[in-house]
Image (tube, rainbow, N blue to C red; front, side, top):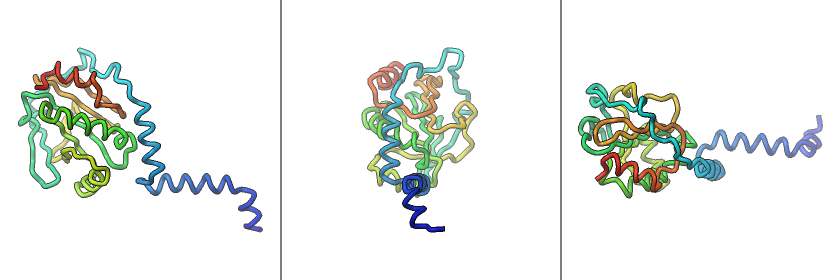
Length: 195
């Protein structure tokens, strides 16, 4: 077989295969990051974000016992955060929609970090998550599961974001990327006890 003629005849097929390999095996490449952010910006609709009344769950004591650890090993119990709304975001550095929505969540955290408890729960190792956040200049509090995730918070999809109001009622359980730093989200957080 004449490889030179084959390559000339199939150059676009070869280029496509090489591009796919690059996108798959180099997760933090600039093209993948750009496309991830572009897709994340396209999914900004927040209509229907709140759970229906019959789906809203008043958290029981077992859920409030959920324990998390920060990247230094300090533990936190969900029950310690009662009295303010709590936003929990499950994410991973290998999840393109997670990466796409993190800047909007970081913006919301910057604006509402004193009014709402934010728990950015990474499914990665502490070192990997912290390195990723530093590389992207995202200043958010990252946590890791120290006990099993409670049933109402479980999901087979990431990102998953949960919002609990100041009275302990789960108001939002949203999967997929979203622009969280919006006036509508802020109004909802204010209604649910952000102060």
